[in-house]
Every structure is written in C-alpha cells, then in structure tokens.
Length: 482
Image (cartoon, rainbow, N blue to C red):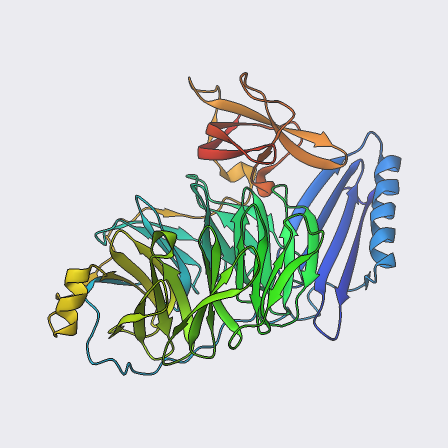
C-alpha cells in the first residue's frame, strides 16, 4: 500500500443495551476502496471497488464514512473492545419417566452439543456447537464432514439447497462441493433460528425480532414481536410465522403488516410447519397446532415436561414431540396420545420424521434414528427393542471447509464441456454475478460466495437452477477461470 495515497478509517457502533455491536472500516489505496464490516471481534465481510481516479475513490470513501457517522458510528481502535458474547441455548435434561425405551436403530455421537438436523431422500444432516456438520446415509453410514468457522444453530432446506446458520452471524450454503457464506446477517442480530423460503432468509433472534433478507444478502424488512427469545421462524408463500415468549405472530411475506397473533401455552421453544398449520412446542408442556389462515389453536398435544422439539408425519397425520425429560411422544392428529417412550440418551433438541423413522438430535450431541413404525413401537412398549448400533467415523472422511479467498480455490484454463461461466460485474456500487453462458437470463443475479468475488473475474460452475424471485443458485463445483 503506497503511503502517499493510502488511508484507513475504522469506526465502531456499540450500544450499552446490546442492540448494536459492530464495526465499519474504509481503506483507500489510490483508486481502490476496500470496505470491511461485521461484528466486533470477527473478520467481517469485505467489498472492494475500483474507481477511475484516486480523487473519486477518496470522495466515495468520505461519503461512506459520513453516512456511518450520522448513524452513530464513532472512531475507535480495532481490538480494544471485546466481542459480544453469543447466546447459546441453555437446556437441562432429566431422566425419562417412561416405562419403556424407544426402538433406536443407530446412534451417531458428533462430539459436541448439537441442535441442527435435516433429513432428505438421500442423506441425514446434523450440525453441532463445534461447527461440524456431518452427512450420513439412512443406515447411519457417515458420508462427509463440513468444518464451519463457528457453532451451528440450525440446518434448514430450501428446495434441495441446505443452509447452516452459525454463531458467527453467517448462513452457509452446503449444497455445492464448495460450501460458502450465502448470507451475512447484521452484526446486531443474535441468531436463534432461521428459515429460508425461495431464497428469502428469515431470522428470529434473542430480542424477539424478525429480520428478512433477500438472496443478495440485502435487508428487506424487520419487525419486533411481543415476546423475546424467538426460537421459532417458519415461512411459506402466505406468511412468516414467528414464535417467541409471547406466542406466535404471523406477518405478511412482504412485511406490510401483522396477519395475526396468538398467545400460546407458555413461551415457544420450537416450531414446525405443514401446508395449512404451524406447530409450536412450548415451555408449558404442550405442542399447539395453529391455523396458518386465522391463527386459531386447532389442537393441543399435552406432554409431561417442557417441549424442546416437535415434528409431524406428512400432512400432520401423526405429531411427535421431545421433552426436557428425555422422552419422545407420538399423538394422533386430534391430540390423542398414542405412546411415550424414553430416548435412551438425553432430550431431543430437534427432530424430523421420514418414512416410518424419527430422527432426533439429543442433548448429548447425538443423532439418533428411531424406528417409529407401529410394529416396532408396539414391541418397544412390551420391552423388546433392537440393539442400537453406535456409528463410527470413517478413517478417511471427506472434509470440506468454506474457501475464503479466490486465490485458494481450484482453477481451470478453459470451461469444460457442459459447464457454465459466470462473471463478476460492478453494478451500482456492488459486485454482482451474472451468467455469461447462453441459455440463461443474463439480467438475473447468481447467489454466489462473496468472499471470492472480484471485479471482472470469471468462474466455472457445474450447474445453475432458477429460483423464484429472479435469481440463480449454484449446484456442484465452483472453479476460477484463468
């Protein structure tokens, strides 16, 4: 960096009530302006823009600094203020009072406290507090490991894209061979839970806020609900359903207003959704089914302890719940309890049902597969259960970590046959990624790793899929085109 034309301005905004704790840094080197921002104590996100002249660069930098100062940012020294502590869910788990234990087929211990789970046609996903995400087949074979920079709060799917929300404030796309940070949530948002619907990210947080961000990581709208500690957010075409200490609040997808609010039996600790209903697991020993249209409580499923997790079979035919006393329940649609069994290994913090199997993530950090078929449960109630198999890690397990610089990624000198070329383009002060190859709408943006975007750079991807809202998502590998 040349000493004559180089300068750096570092600002911080840290409020006593914890509502904001973030930094903003602007560095000028000749015609190049580099902006870095994020949570205090974190590396943050970086954007670089090249201007025609050094004077224009200094003018643009001064404008950016002025805007932040007017918002309350002040000059500071990097490293002097400590990072804000990230909230991690504190839970207790008592022994089960059930007389019988669930028919566990296999158990995989992740090595750390875990909350995240997703199960699809091919794989089971589990994410833990150490930042590890493991994929397994339905028989418990471990397939791969993703190593993320911070603890995993939750795993969600949007069509066949899988995302992990982490304690570093970022949401990582795990669907491609190269995992990448697809969204960078505002530094003052302490993520509790998230959902993604057609590329739109919905985040619920400690303060009871709901923050909505589009596929280009740009803030759309935010609302504060009537209760704090919002552990539930689910979204569809009709609304965003926000569960918190005061109940469940539904908002219009475009943020134009509240659709309804329903107090629940205790604060909401977990949420699930089906086509016409949302299910709220509460601190007062119940799961409640609410109509998505009106918010009316349609059914209550009574448990014997606080409900940490819930799920349903397709269409809500059966409703499952996991409580704070290491028990798992099954109810008929109308609320009739069909069975209660002990998990055999801690309380279920997250769960998902698929094809007569109930997958649980328990307080000891294990992914547990339970045979939930009628025959297996009936046998378990009589004391006959299979011998649970403990799954072991393979010696040479493929491990993937996010690439944080373009220089560190694989390169090719020409695009292979059938591959698609995309290009980074400077548009209205931001770097966008557009498709160069024929057969695609070149005006649409591509959801693409921000950490490897460089003006004019071209990349080769295996496949692109159009998503609602006018953008493309990447499938497969990403390589730099030299």
